[in-house]
Image (cartoon, rainbow, N blue to C red):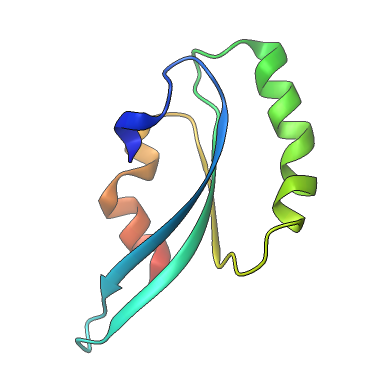
Length: 84
């Protein structure tokens, strides 16, 4: 998933994350990810930041939200921690 995000452009993403809990139950959480890398243009970051909340409100079923500026912030370990 992270490999598909552009290095210099902002994006929004919806990610359906499947995981197994400590009680061995299969679960799924829907993530809204706002990708705004440090290397993107300031104008682009401002445009995405100003429209994020409106766009997010239009989506139903989002359970977790993540703002990421580099791939480590949306790595599998961080997503798993936020899903719990």
